[in-house]
Length: 330
Ligand code: CP
Image (cartoon, rainbow, N blue to C red; front, side, top):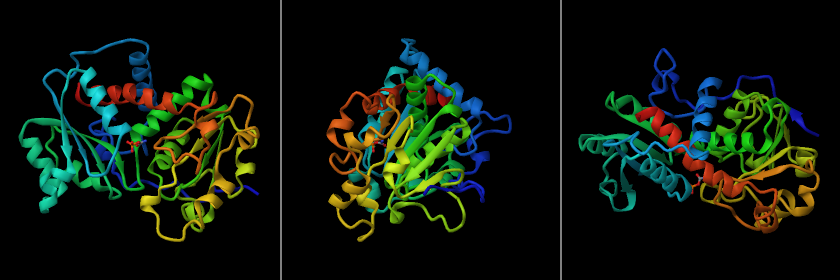
């Protein structure tokens, strides 16, 4: 049975909106989608769509230096930000944590300050700690712009934006008509949190979340992360008739021992197979932020099948990141 959770306010990511926007609502940093206006989200998606439709802005960030400051691994986010910055004419510096002076104990804050001193104005930052970018944004130079490329379990705002753009392209409808299932390791997923914030802002019709109890955020407080969602541990029930199935990666690197019994058990209960997908609407689409654990949360035939938007998400990531960089730094 699906349990509706409506009786507590949505959680917040701990990011302060006054750090992110000025009193007029103009974006200074992009730390979270939580609290962003619908108009701002739509404007960013519209601009990204213009880039997809062929518009170029090769001089928009001419002479502006941007650093990708990643304290955690990444393929899609880092490279698509680099690609986006290059297409806007920016100079891109790549910080490699493994060979940097953070290995000698230098803090993230001192690292940022030193790179700022080299004339860098834009920072795309990934960090393992929830809310790590608060302190960085608070202490940054007033001309510096910071973009959250994923922090802990908290937020991955550009992934949320690119997911919404991908959904908007695929469904061509008002979000209020959509039924969406988000499936898997919600406990550790910053993508799920940003998608949930975005879906609420855009007025999604029905959001179902599904996963084993150990991988769902706590619900004893009556909502929090899952505010406004229908919650179930039964995947067949979760995807019955939905328009969109968003699968999440099983985040084994963040997982304590014993949260799942085995990968085979997880696949049996929560893996998206071709047979299971037939329960969704016949024109349902499948999304996954990547990287994929093939054969664990999703089967090859589904990940690579006609209903999959996974590579479309990746392609849209470049355009969304162009829109964000141009908005903040252009
Ligand atoms: N979706 C995503 O954040 O992928 P990467 O970890 O490869 O950047």
